[in-house]
Image (cartoon, rainbow, N blue to C red; front, side):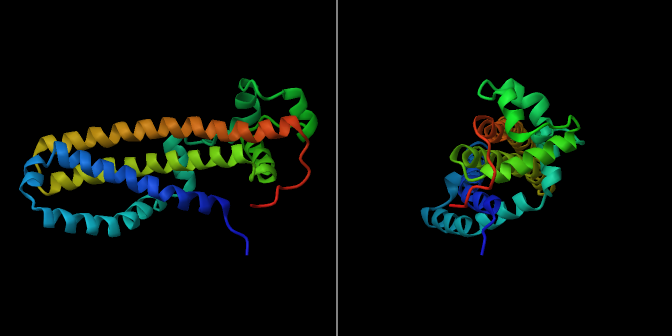
Amino acid sequence: MKTNPSRSLKSSNLPWLVSLVVLDILVLAVFVFTDLIASVSLTQLTAARAAVTGILPVGVLLLSAVVPQNIKAMLVYWKIKNPLPGSEAFTRHAPADARIDMTALKKNVGAWGIEPSEQNSLWYKLYKKVGSETAVVEAHKSFLLFRDMAIVSLLLTIVVPLGFWLTNVERNAVTFSLLLFAVQYVAAALAARHSGVRFVTNVLAEHSVKKVTAPKPAG
């Protein structure tokens, strides 16, 4: 039975996503609920930690999975049409990468169209042939991680301040949480963009140095 590489990468990224949310909880606890934390006993903190450890991964997984893939791309790249970097793989990203010899690339993969959908389709076919290369796997993993961090952060930007407001938590907490998650979202989205472009160019760099005729075996 074949495994889904993207699903495997997402699974390996889950602990990092959980760690991000744990950090967010700690920041909110320190800056928003200082008095409450000070009044909680060690036994209560231990129980809360155990509950969070068991429940948090499920919540993070749901948050990262609730948004469709194409919507995630739009929210990361802030583009409605053809948001994926593969849509500009040959006309923008490859020429800007010093590692890629465009003449050699064209010789090895053939001519390409300039339409975004054509570029993305060809790039994806090329990716399938070198998807197990270390540089490609690492860039793909980083892209998925930062993309999901951005999406989780964006959802928390909505959910947490709204929850605070509905439960009559003081206004400063609403404002602080809104700013915290908004900044986190923008930072993660920018990191995802960079990683996405690197993912695209790493694939093309492999094809620019050699002609790949068959997919690399998994593992």
